[in-house]
Structure formats: structure tokens, C-alpha cells
Image 1 (cartoon, rainbow, N blue to C red):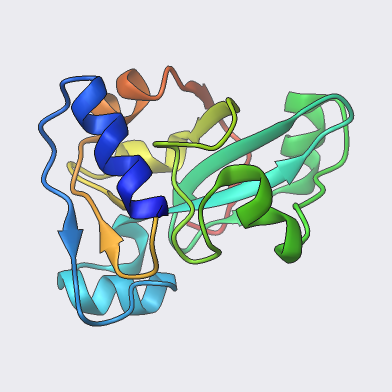
Image 2: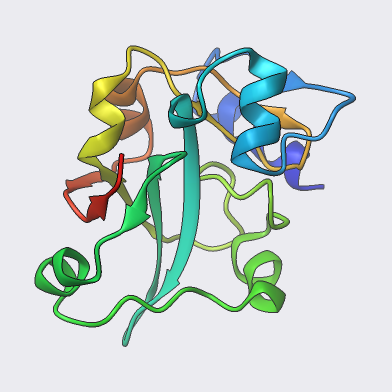
Length: 154
């Protein structure tokens, strides 16, 4: 169902991105990089966070880690990841397929500046076997995203 919500989102918004749907799993950064034949950092990892008054999605390069001090300075609160059992219920996408498209309910989308190092990145597309290829600028535009700098180790 989640992959279908992404397809519907793209159709409804006249977005002509090709959705790759593989037989192999792309549920982790490492698996997705292998399937696409790219480096792990070219995989756009989507992380769901719980904040005091809302839930958000943050996209980073695959190898990045959250810098807790930068996160707190940006969002005025500590980083708190969404519980695994809540992710699909809230986003409409399973863990390993979470993406900023076709969400069950509206969420603010943030893109870390680490993505800007790459010409193309590969975010998931709603399932553990699907993804798209997109430039960071296009990703920012179609998600109405907000650019932030909250990562380290990339």
C-alpha cells in the first residue's frame, strides 16, 4: 500500500520520477547502495523524529549521524527518534521504506546539507524494495523541505 501512496503522490503532483522497484531489499543504506551500485552516502536516509508538538522527517546522506548539539541548536530540543512500532502508523511507510512522499499525514520535511555533496541521491519510495533517483535540489523543492545542518560523520 505504501508504494502505491508514493505512486499516487507522484501522479497527483505531475512528478515524472521513475520509481525503481527491485526484487532485492533496499531496506538499509548498505543494501540500497549495493542494489543501486552507488556509495552508501548517495542513499538519502529518512529518519522520523518526535518533537514536542509535531513529528518530522529528516533526510541525510546514508553514512551521516545526527550531531545532538547541532540538532538541539536547530530545533530547540533534544533529538528523539520515533519508536519503530509507531513509524508505519504515523508515516504510512514501513521501516526501511520511509520517505517524504505519499505520507499518511502531513509532516515537516528537513534535508541536511550533507545531501548537497552529491549530484543525485536515492531516497526510498514507500517500500523496502523501492526508491527513486533525484537531485538534492529537486528533493528539497518537491517536498517543500527546509535545509538544515544537523549531522556529523559524513
